[in-house]
Image 1: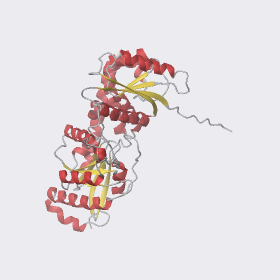
Image 2 (image 1 turned 45 degrees about the vertical axis):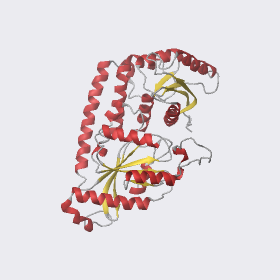
Image 3 (image 1 turned 30 degrees about the vertical axis):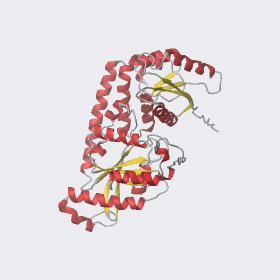
Image 4 (image 1 turned 135 degrees about the vertical axis):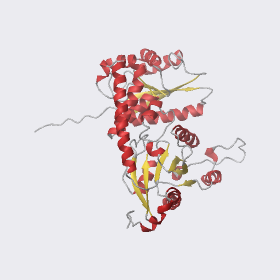
Amino acid sequence: MSQFVITETKVETAVIVGLITPQQNERKTTEYLNELEFLAETAGAKVVRRFTQRVNGPSSVTYIGSGKLDEIADFIKQKEDEEDPVGMVIFDDELSAKQIRNIEKALQVKILDRTSLILDIFAMRAQTAAAKTQVELAQYRYMLPRLTRLWTHLERQRGGSVGLRGPGETQLEMDQRIIRHRISLLKQRLVEIDQQKTTQRKNRGRLIRVALVGYTNVGKSTLMNLLSKSDIFAENKLFATLDTTVRKVIIENLPFLLSDTVGFIRKLPTDLVESFKSTLDEVREADLLLHVVDISHPDFEEQIQVVEKTLGDLGCADKAQMIVFNKTDAYTWVEKEADDLTPCTKENIPLDELMRTWMAKLNDNCFFISAKEREHIDELKALLYKRVRELHVQKYPYNDFLYDNYNTNGEIE
């Protein structure tokens, strides 16, 4: 009888590091580190400690000051003999090759930055050939200026998996010429994939295209499942959806195309945005953008700004857009005491008041739902029907009569 040995992947232990600067106050740094910890957990690591330092700006040599570096080194040494010793330190900003080399020399553990962590998650999430090619291209672009450091890093072959999901096993003997050649091949492959997708989009007929956009983990895939009656992977982790999914949705005999796209995030690596431009073509070619926002998040307004900036970078700032505030069921607030004279913050505002404020600001271009509890989904569908029909009349004025001839399957009778 054959025997099978089941082995569990050991969770890697990490500490995270961020800076408090004149441009980034303590509250914002805490929020960024909360997000970084969530990224680490998504990648498969357990964060046991976070370190912050108040400085005017990052050190060009070691990112943090020597005193803080010694403090982290002491903490790592204290944990050496424990069951879960610290195996990596993750920094909240992108590090240069020089900074990584100096920090690694001082701490003697694996060093990751925010960019490499996001790339690692993308490598883990990529399923289709297009997504895998895009991630691989971004990884090589990230490697190129850090090639010398990566050789040294990989020669040590430390245990664990987070941060080491590279594009292949040939990294040890790569030089800049080989990487540049590989980048060139990947770019060509993406051009071919993009041409195939363009052909597919042309064959979709005269249907209005609606794209779900938003910050990562705001509930886009859950909303996509509700609207399209599909079963797209969705969970409470960052970048649960990496590949763009397109479904035909029918509301009251009106068919249109709905796409679920990769979520945006603060400090999204430039190489990743560049590599994923073909995936985001669904956003660029959409007639209507549904910007999904997690209203329960303490920094949802900043997340809106991040998404709007990314849309601007993609040339989509002027597209028709609706904001869908999701997770109303998770919204919490604290009523101020009568003698508290400090200014009100978002945490002190009831949901009804916040809704009225945004509705007054955006008129009919915002809506409030709970995708998890399926609250106000029917009202959203009715509004979506109205908007899609208006766009179809504008875009295809001579075949509006076809609406009356669609059957319940969205097909022309």
